[in-house]
Image (tube, rainbow, N blue to C red; front, side, top):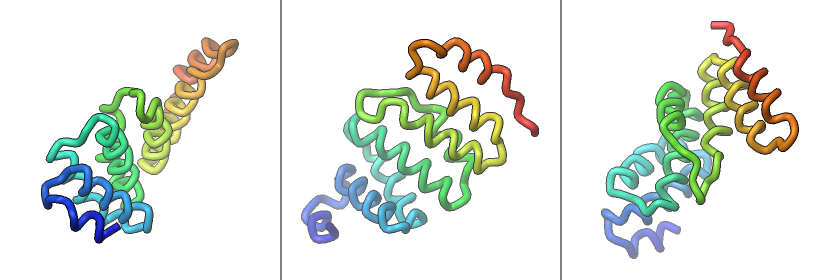
Amino acid sequence: MQALIAERRDDDPAAIFEWASVHDFLGREAEAIPLYRRALELGLDPVRNSQAQIQLASSLRNVGETTEAVRILEGMEPDATVGDAHEAFLALALFDAGRPGDALRVALKALGKTLPVYRGAINHYADAIVDSK
């Protein structure tokens, strides 16, 4: 992959994103983070942009930067590429941030969208969860 990336310009956001993804996949999140940030700064196409935001937030969570991970994920909207995946990663980040009630609420609301019969009940119960903080 490194050889393929070397064939691209140094400021090619897609190449930088793919290189970040390689680092991430190998468990080298700390090295992936600045690459994701650079790719996002340079401007990614819509498909990679959503993925880069989620993967950046996931890497931040994995290195203990849960506050920034939550901020990124809370600012995302569902889209055709990743759907509501940001909500699953947000639930994980909230849990790691010591906000288990918020994490459960987000997870239940995401699940509720898929329930044809009990959506209303699940949303009601999710809204009633009080975080223990």
